Structure formats: C-alpha cells, structure tokens
Length: 96
Image (cartoon, rainbow, N blue to C red; front, side, top):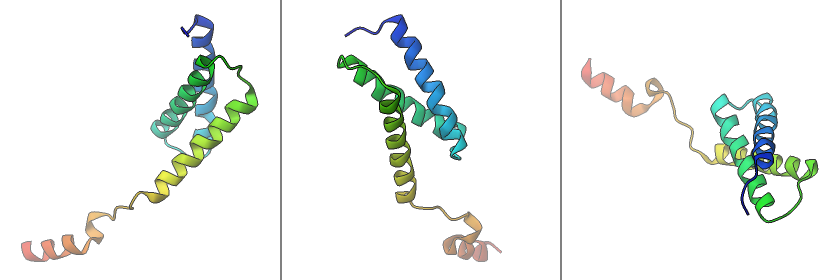
C-alpha cells in the first residue's frame, strides 16, 4: 500500500509527538529521536496493513518502545571510567 502525502504528514506528526515525552522521561536527544523513529515505523506498518490509527494505539506503541529501550539500557554492561579500572591503574603504575 503506497504512502500518501497525508500519511507522510501523519507520520511526521507522530514522530514529533513521540519525541517530546521521550525527552521528558530523560532520554538524550539522540535516544529520543531513535525511539520516536521506532514508533513511527510501527505506526507505518500498522497503516500499511490497512488498519485505522487511534491515539490509544499510538500511546501503547510509545509505551512499548520506551519499555524496550529501558530494558536494553539495563542489560547493557556499565563501563567504568578508565581511572577506576584495575587494569588501567596497573598500567599507570608501570608507566610511572
């Protein structure tokens, strides 16, 4: 199903709408844009299947994207600053 100009405008509005709450939730601009783009893609897929779009559906998609983002962040190993690393400390000892 081809995307109409009206669909393009709707998808851009969804992107802008979704980006703002992601920023308010504390995401960086880059992460908020990535999440908003994911919402836009899911909405596009929904529209291409011939389904109608509702605000409730869009909210549910945004909640799911945020939940996935938070879960991915929690599973990502946290990096220590170099000066706190034991390996780095021993390397500095060797150099001094």
